[in-house]
Image (cartoon, rainbow, N blue to C red; front, side, top):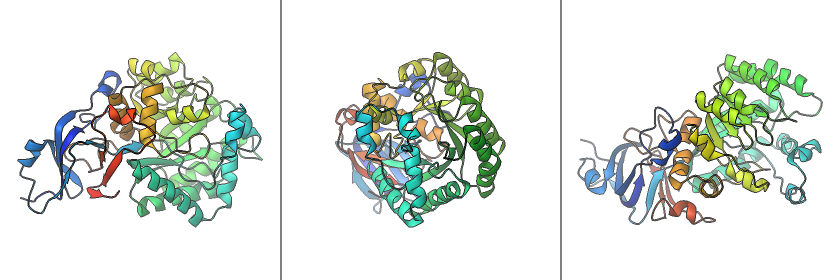
Length: 417
């Protein structure tokens, strides 16, 4: 019999987050994380081959003299974080907008003045491929250090066919060149560029962008920023329906700034996920719950916008929704790479328990990017994406904020950080 390549043992607690690989954890199921005291697991050829107590794994037959061992005594072991909503590929930054936010200038007003997304579009278009990749690589390195092992990355800072294709190709290159698994999403409908109306740009996205992205197989998902002043429900539905016809899976930025029907649209189209959802209506929550739409919540964005407005996570869970958490890593509204910070904010402001937050940041997040069959939980047969956290228990993880609790990151069975 072969022996394991790596054996992690004696953890204070090991959270398997098991039992949800076929479908997300909904409602009350989100409170179950499968904690094992004195936990252990064995890894062979990048996959988990044994999980249980230290005694159980020790006697599983997988541990041999050549097996590398890591003592996790006093630590918490969890699946690697899955970040299902990021805009991590871009050039430049927007720190000058902080003073405008402090003065109370609304985001859409900044956008109308040529700031916001359009500012990053200009900086990204002007940057060389090497510069965009270099800046993004640095962000991805930060994400990995904070425990993210899988992440979705959206285009959307090009807003032309050539630049959107370039962004998606760079995401593909970065996926091959660093450790985090990247899932590409086409977000050509991120803002309306100068020279277009919403209607004319919507038609351009449908007639020119979508067929080209589909032909080159550069993205798995299509997303739209559905918000009054950006893309209406009508425009968003046209784009997403066309994307569905081309074989894309659907995501939607919905009801972040106003309750405008984005959540209802997500339900109507049976989108994989709807994201933000700060202002979604009761009808929107019901529509998403009834159609299995995962709510991807972004509390770091709410925190950074300083509007004291957060998504109604408890109402969503009470209606039977599955929730995921993400950083929304972007240069304007959420310039952070830290999933541990997101878990803290989820507990404090979304009123989620530490257990619910962990489920939302691992297996449910994996469902939101179509990877739950391979990552998001610590179960036999899964890819060995594992975190050893320098915290004594799960409650301590969101409790002690502002630091990095990640001691060791294991990606596909290899220690990478």
